[in-house]
Image (cartoon, rainbow, N blue to C red; front, side):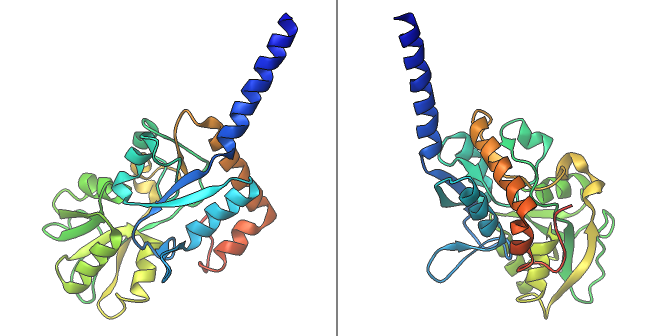
Length: 256
């Protein structure tokens, strides 16, 4: 009788675990365009490099993933509050964030750039940005870096990078500081006539802030899901699927 009870308990535990992994996995993604990583197409559907990467991971692991557009500053509260299960939004793995959430292994190592108006005297240094209004994404690593390393600049934080770009075009700010890939796409489009790269900031400039790269956010208690995401990421890297997707968006690898 005791053996039967133990067997029943084991089967029940396995059933609960299977049901948990069978539930839809809600993936928090950007609610605004961050090209070419993410955008919203004409039908209102999320698209872009990160969307294809997370879809490939979910397909590899047979996860029923549902995309949930969310403001960047709300992603961690939504994750810890149980409203989403993963974060896929160019979020850097940092010690500060690891105090609250966990991450998958890195899936990208993006660089950072400062972009300003063509012909203006502006350099991506503390002295070169003194007195300049610098647009950053609210609650991002670039926001933290700017607050720490550009103390004489006037930092203006935006809920979306696209809004900072628009204010730069309109002349309401002097420069913006963000992911180099985001800004390159901006310079090839809307910012072509007005703006140029004023300098780059290497990840090594402050690893405490920038961390080792971008990862997929997950709740600390959801280690089964974290393991599944890491396995899926490893599989698409090994199979060439990651490079196949990335080659459609980038001329050179952003994974080191």
